[in-house]
Amino acid sequence: MRYEIRVDGHLSETLARAFPEMEHVVMSGQTVLLGQVIDEAHLFGLLARCQSLGLRVLEMRQLPQPWIENTAT
Image (cartoon, rainbow, N blue to C red; front, side, top):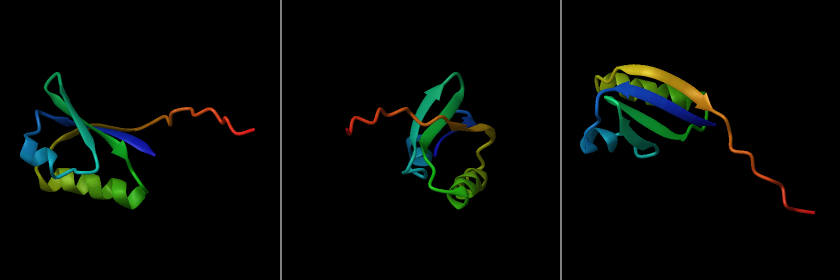
């Protein structure tokens, strides 16, 4: 499952390193963390990490999986 987690403010490179499994993009006063989430425990771990770092989560959503054409015949 691919997730997007939006947090308030711009994450410094130091804070971004607290999420090594996630890509991050800064836009419009927010930081968007993007990446694969293995299971529910991983998701709750990411949210707990945000909380322990004092980050305010604005939005979290599961992204649709990209459609991959099956070329095997």
